[in-house]
Image (cartoon, rainbow, N blue to C red; front, side, top):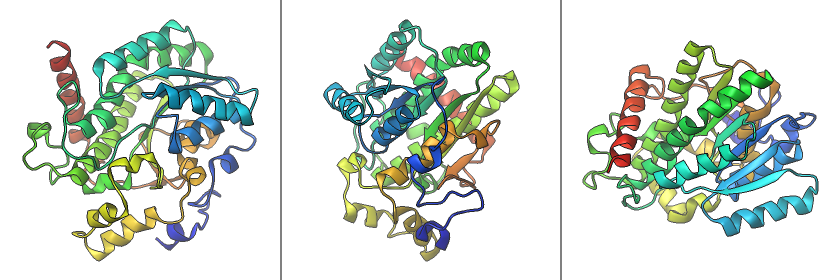
Length: 331
């Protein structure tokens, strides 16, 4: 645990103090195209900047187009040769997600990397415009649908190019602190029993389960696409728009001393360049060729919670997510 807090480097040369630029030094991404959701701010913006710096053609997917275009200009100011495009995406809206996928596919670009980065945190109970609890809708359902809609494009790209595809789901250490049974399948949209922090943990658990189940399915198909999930570290970014330091402290009041130490070890000594490192590692580093269905923190493989490793729960979530999307789409 001290290694995580102190920035001590693990045997692979990376640790909590490693920045995205440091580990990507020397990596050539000129043959890659990547979509980054929430790529206009915080960790997403740094991920967009670093991947563009390494030659990747980056598609910034964002709800706020003004912020996305400003992010694009900021990156271009620093890197005039960066290849960047901006497309509108609201992960709370099935209609918007479907439109985004259509608009991207119409560009006739390859797709090597999908980084499901966008998210919201600790917000009060509310439903999305599709009637789904908003943290579950944004953090999981939106990315689940987006990934499914883009999967054929990624499969075709991997087959035609011979280049391994990669999908990265941003999860969190908070996945350990979901509801008692992990996912409230029977009460997903119920205000009764809702807790903003447990709901966030539920959505982050869903990110890992989604990645693991998709990895399993793609392996069975023999598809050359790796799917992994990451904990980037918690940084004071726009993700905290519904929260503040006191709320974060209250999140861990009920935990045991050991659990509190585990949580806060991931809170400390992280800035945005360090926070983007694990995402970029999972998306670009050749060391992860052929590695799939794993969970990473501080650029090292970590063991997630027992719920996150539950294959039955992962399959149940997959079916539940499809059924939920279908029920909304037929309304």
